[in-house]
Length: 325
Image 1 (tube, rainbow, N blue to C red):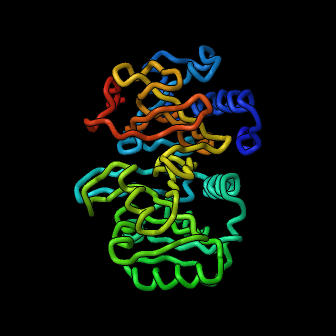
Image 2 (cartoon, rainbow, N blue to C red):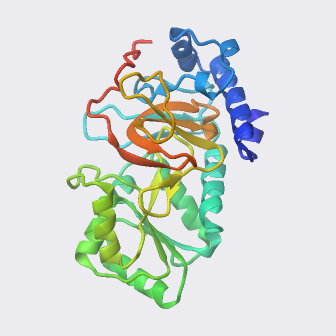
Image 3 (cartoon, rainbow, N blue to C red):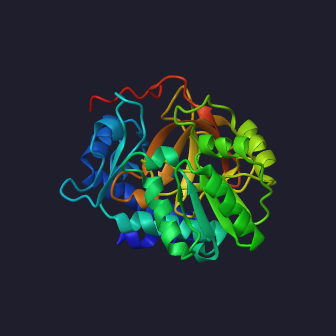
C-alpha cells in the first residue's frame, strides 16, 4: 500500500514516486480534490512529475469535507479562531498515521522523546477542543515517561520552578510554548536555561500584537538565556511538521516538502530562492489532501530548507476563486 511507503522515503526519487502514487489515489478517492483537478483540466494521465500536481487552496478545509473516506473518521482536528469565524476542520481517517508522523519527525530532528522532560505552555490551545498540537504534546508528555513532564495553563510560577529544578539536575528538557505565553514568561521571570530546548509554536492568538519572528526570538533568547529559539511549522490541515533549530530556518522530514508559487499566478511554481506563496506536500495527509496551497509567504532554499516571511494580506489566495466547486 502507498501508506506503507510514506515513512520509508530515502531519496528525492522515492519522494516523487510516492507523491505521484498519492496524487492518483487522492484524485480517485477524494471528490473535493477531484473536482478541483477537473476544473483545472488536470487528469492523472497528464501528471508525470511533481510540477504537474495541482495544490488545493487551504480554504477548502473551511468549507468542504476534504477526505478520501466520507464514512469513517477517527478524529476531527479544528483550527483556532475568534467568535463567529469559520474554522478549518481536518477529518482524520487514521489517527495512527498522524502519531507516526510526529513521532518519527521528532526522532529525526531531536532523538528519543524518552530522553526529555516535556513542558507544554499552550494556554490558547488547552482552552478549546480539537487541537492537533495538544494531541501531539499530550502524547510527547506521556511517552517521555518523566514525572516532571506536564501541561501548564497560566501557572508561570510553577513552570519557572520546574525549569529551575530540571536545570539543577542537568535534565534535557523540551519547553513547547505558544508565542504570547512565552513572552508572558520572560516578562515575569529571568531564566538561564542550559539544558532546555525552547520551541515556539507561533501565533499571538489575538492576545498580543503580532511581531516579526526575529524580534520575538531575540526577546525570548535574552529572557530565557538560550542562544537559539527553536520553532515548529505545522497547522490543522497538515499531519506533519517542519522544525527550525534557530534563525527561523525550517527543515522538513523526508515525507514532507515545501515549494513556492508565484504570488500573482498561483498555478506557476517558482525555483528556490524567490519569495512566494507556500505550497506544502505532506504525504502523511494520505487520507485527506497531500497537496495544499497555504496562505503563508516564504522562501525555499536550494537544500530544501525554508523560511516563513509572512502571510497574504487578503483572506483569499489570489487567483484561486474556485470555492464554489
